[in-house]
Length: 112
Length: 116
Image 1 (tube, each protein chain N blue to C red):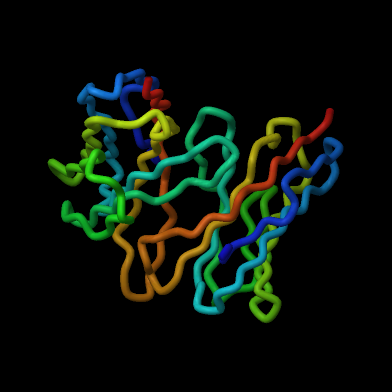
Image 2 (cartoon, one colour; image 1 turned 90 degrees about the vertical axis):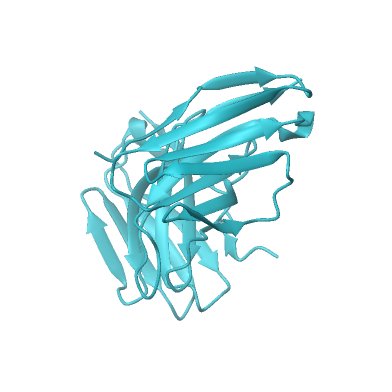
């Protein structure tokens, strides 16, 4: 049973526009959420995180929004750049647990 | 410095071989992790070491044997692997999780393992 779902396997966006990547989770005990970016044949790169006491966290072009009532997480990238083309994974953990639960990933393509 | 290094980058081994994967970090992190990732799938947790002690083993077959010689190093010893064990093996590290504190994990570039 998937606890973390990224329902869009792929997303294509024009350079300069906004990319919105979505993630839904089922366990209301999850309290820490992360986004990772992954290029082929490389390890995931940490992008941004948010704890459940916040509803928004911003870092440069990346903003993560958390809607706890809807159990929904989103990553906004503005403006999108071709170098942002990668697979994006959302991940979550519970109560300081060392175990991260990952979604299946969304492949983002930013077209020049 | 948020770098986790892994060696080798690529490894091809036969089913009767013994090999080891190595991971190193110098961020002062006290938690280190091994993950396995198959193509088009998310990383799957295998083992967690916290303060050099094994804290999580996700029911991994005994042909995979982790070792944490010190707080900066993590090894994964491989013996009698099967072709289906071919995957990208990722190491990660983080500050030690616990209580109400959660920390991001930083991943290495991985070792691409092919078992023939």
